[in-house]
Image (cartoon, helix red, strand yellow):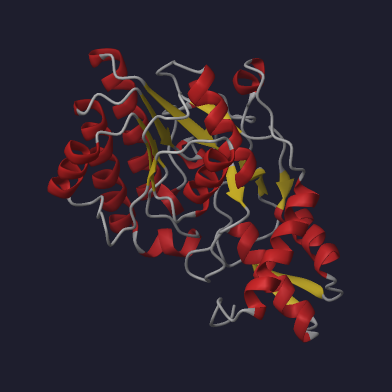
Length: 317
């Protein structure tokens, strides 16, 4: 990519998109094309077509998606399936028709089977049933991965598909309905510590294991792969190491100064028993994350406490 390329970052206000924008600006990209949802509804096929005809971007990074935590996925599978299908279909199709030089699609580790062998290799995609609690979202993401693959193989479209592990960090959502596990735990534990509450209830058994990567590392990996990877085959990005929810909660408690106890509500779903990616393909290219979980958690706690000071979070967990 040239620093003068016109780069469209779809979803630039979200956690991943904003991290990509921060990095690209730091690297000297001077022609970023950014649109809010009010300015460009990616679900509107005609609007997306008009945007591509007018702007003619050279590079497209699709970080826009409808996302949410486990309860949101359970409650609204139709919406997660539909909105993500239509967003990615519109953007991938118009990127191909518009002749973009390089395209990047962001997948999710939930595309792998619920009982997937660990760590999860790229070739394990579509080898078994999905985790039911986020099946709608996962099906949409699989369709996006395959659309990029098919357009690349059939039409010479220069697209790559990146499958990240669980992401967290700057500009993550702490909203109870939309947050993921790490940000949700940070909010619960920090609120309890700040209010001297004696216990925190956590969904599930606490035994499920997850892999976490800071979103700034994800942005670095996306940039690296846009420069050095040209295969239609999906590629995992992450640490290749996971942690139990119980151990994650203990880490957050230590960093936040919470001295109470955790109560695990086993009547609530755990989701997939384990999600740890095989990242040998990524590392073989010379790409590796740098922000260790302890440092990233500390940073996230500080960011949440700053949000609390500014009264931007609202509500309570």
